[in-house]
Image (cartoon, rainbow, N blue to C red; front, side, top):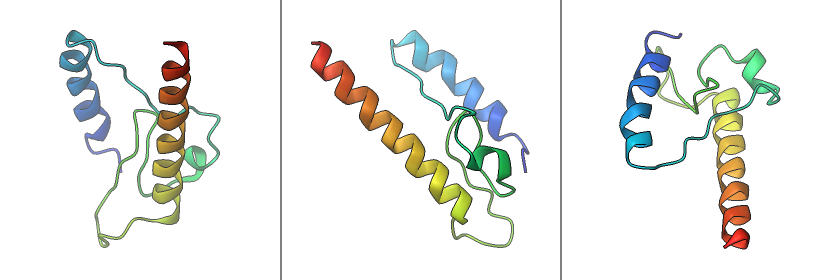
Length: 81
């Protein structure tokens, strides 16, 4: 694990910021972030396909948490306008 996932995500951040996009990661307050051995980082949801192409329970939980965080942020921004 961690065979370049973070480097890939970080290298994509600069052009996104240049175009005014917001970036959102997974905060360390998410419990599964501390126990995953298959994928998912503070930089976002990810998947390590070593022997399985199926998402692990941890990967699924982290992707769901990131999606909920994104939806909540979008809802808050919409109300602010």
